[in-house]
Image (cartoon, rainbow, N blue to C red; front, side, top):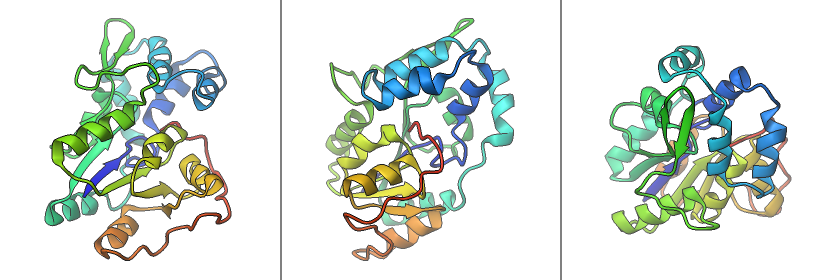
Length: 231
């Protein structure tokens, strides 16, 4: 089994890029950047590139700001342990940046995200290992590469945001943070998903083998969206 998991707002309770942008961007980035990204007018890469271009604080300062807000969602270590015990491939897949993902993930946890360097401003790039052509979705590209590299054919996606939705639709099973944008989109479009609050619920569902308790069936009522999810 190949398990892909978003980072911001999924592994962490807070979306850390959102927190950086709320603190440092001098404009309403949700209206200026997130709305066009949600509508497909700009790509997730362009969203991150534009947003971080106006952040003028180095990694060390940003990490100091983030540490009080970087709590991991309960049960994450249990999910990692279960994957190791069962021989499942676990990979974090994010539209965030490595300077904070590497800082807050347990050591040795595999992840893919955009690259970035700071030279007075942040310059975000697509990693060489995941080249993007016109219309390519970064998370779908990572998913495809991991399936080819591992030979795993059974796939699980865990996430919370609008930008998680394209990759989630390509997976066999979806877990969405309860009330998140991903949860709402799955409910709207009849994509079966299992809402969750903590990773213990995912461990119980996955370790039950074929049991799919808690999954919302197609056509079930939408969740009440709690927040704007970036993904």
